[in-house]
Amino acid sequence: MNVPRLPALGETIRNLYFHVGMWMAMMTLFTISFVQAIRYLRTNKLKYDIYSRQYSSIGILFGILGYATGGIWMSYTWADPNNPAAASFSSIAREPKLIGAAIALLIYFAYHVLRDSIQDIDKKARVSAVYNIFAYAMLFPSIWIIPRILPSLHPGQDGNPALNLKDLSPAMRIVELPAFVGWALLGVWITTVKIRLTLLKEQKLIQ
Amino acid sequence: MDNDSEDQVNFIKRTKADTMTGMKRALFFLSAILISVIAFSQDAGDKPVGMADEMRSNGRIYVVVAVMLTILTGLILYLVRLDRKISKWEKSERKS
Image 1 (cartoon, each protein chain N blue to C red):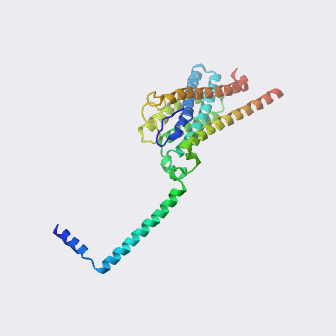
Image 2: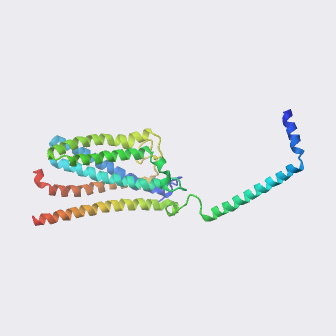
Image 3: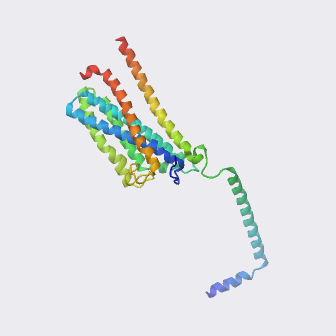
């Protein structure tokens, strides 16, 4: 497959399918988690609380993978080629997109810490559902809006990065959009496996 | 303007000592150039700049490989852990 020949990127442009796909899957999973949290608050069924919890934990998994792949990608594109990546750490670590993504992930880590610190099951479910809604409200400002206001090395500062159909080469678009859907569905599938296990485990609790 | 032309006249009228320093200076520059040429030829013969390691060869395709492997190992490790959890639960369920 032919990809655009871009300076500083080279063949690493192909990482778009993987690195950006991770974040797309993460956003999908967090969105489902948010919807399930609302469903729990509307119906008070513990089933939806389990859904919400598992979707957010697989979302965190994809977020960590996105962070790791971004770390590999940037150390061969942003970092000075004549220095090891560690030497340009101080300039890269100031990247607003990195800090924003770290904040978003930490908010979701805090969601799990909060959940596991409450003993009472109904209270736990209600408090964490409310927290989940607030965490989701912080997700998009911290990964999209704030990094876009600040100067950044990260591409995709204007428009809809990776989803804007005009600024991607058509050959890449054919691979990219199905790949994003595929990553999201893979995440959903892993979550359903985990949800089924948890539902079996806590069958007595739910009824 | 007048001052400038006077200076230039003075510069042309060199004494013998001045030419000696001029020759010394020329030698110094020549040796400096030679050293730099030697240094540069060593540098160029060694490696092209910016292609310092394997990850930067072949248009940096190995970066993509590394990213893919990271995702695969991450997902597979997670699934293996999930599988272990399931078999543990199955065992405990069979006992009870």
